[in-house]
Image 1 (cartoon, helix red, strand yellow):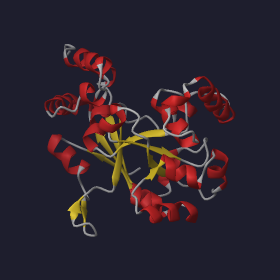
Image 2: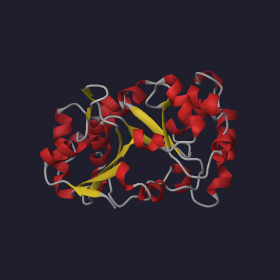
Image 3: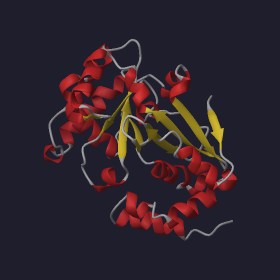
Length: 261
């Protein structure tokens, strides 16, 4: 695996903000999207996979019943991708994985769980421009038509209105990233993205191993986590900001004032 083990805070910043210069745009704008994990050994499994059992068969039932019982006025549009985004956002097991455009937000999620401070953390970084070069023609055309970096729920609903249509576009396998609708401040503040693959059983780790030039895994040693955490708190990258409201405020205070030892 293409792993980079950082030694200190400066090393972490260098790796998080590497390869940002875009000659085509004449500005610093990273092509990478990021996912922070509290344990570097965790695979990139979706919540649907973690459900266990014959999870692929459960997928349509989970989503159908979520749509049945959720209030229909809480989605912007009545499309699969709006409902999937809402379901993922509220904890329903889905084939989506959470990502962020912000490397510091990813660093937060790699260091927020105090129960994992004896484990190395990790930040996955994937070049979404390279992943999207491998998309089927229909999906690439939809991106090019909009001149967009990521899909939106509307773009996906126009191109792949059902999971069956999406799945039929493979093989070969592919991964795409899309921006969820701005349903609340949490999605906005986390600079959130979702990834999706055309097979609910496909493991992103295995797909990435076939494409080693489009990703890296930045490992944060357990011994470095407290320093990273303290500096993120100083930079206001906290639960209070990323989870606006009393729940986020309480999570931040609980973690911030937990004694070390």
